[in-house]
Image (cartoon, rainbow, N blue to C red; front, side, top):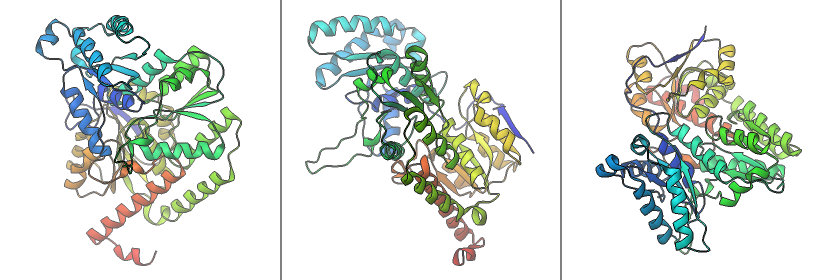
Length: 461
């Protein structure tokens, strides 16, 4: 029995499971209030990413493009940045911050984004006296990394360009990583229960936006410019995801001596326990009885299902690395076997991740962790009968593999567009553990009924 960590053996990609770096930077940008990201590249670099966000959240988000074409790609396109910023500032009087997100084409031609920002700042000062608009350079060449590293780069760019040392604010910095509105609500619930004043980066709660009586829709991020500036004065930082915001927490520690704790992602009982203990450690606040009771409910929900329905079920998991590893750890808590874990970009540090090292020590079954993977890594193993699965867990892009091989699937991660409202449900925390356990169970129950596989058990359990 072993856990093998290996690279995809092919040089090409078949059915990619990750998106490009600029997509991640754009997701970070829309989590900021009074912000419109300006993507410095072709129009498609914006259009298709906006489509993904709209599919997932069923909402529209403002993202601008410099619309680089052939001439600009040959002779340089910095003038497109100047025009784009000027149009945005004129058109949106509330706009306070614009991340300028590069793409593969503009990184390749070598556009001087920082120098252009210096030039634009001078013109903005003369043209709009008394108005301050922050321009943040975000370098995300899409020929390396993925949306995961792009999100991480953008969060660090916001922090490194804006954070400023001042008086201690008594707050905690929480870097959520790429999570859903339901997860952000869960985090805020824990903070309220513990009486902790905190700033959430990036606060996407309002992505689950209401339609109000005046017919207005409030789909925007809640993290403000002042939040970034004041991040240097916090009690400490907790990054829920090592690869999505962890470097921003590390930057604040190195530059401003703000204590930081990176991970683990609070999926499942053990990791949520650690998260709450970390909050208590940094703030001195006790974990209240109300959260202990929530923990007990999660244990009860998991115990109701684990031994009878989950034990020894073989699972394949793919998605963002922190999510996928957290789901694998959750599977072990409920006696399932995550036999295949697919991580889909070229980050060399995954091999050294302590959570993967712990998986290697703990598993008592054959398990593969494939790096730089695509969804063909899953499909080929099923086609060649190298692997037998009882469940697939991942985002909607892998659904055809599950359909073709008649394997039940739990949708989790980004993007999930073929099921309604999943972004409202937390995956993290004790309530997330309940949702995961019950969703997995109901998915397996439906499969038992459809295949007439011991469905009589459902009458007696």
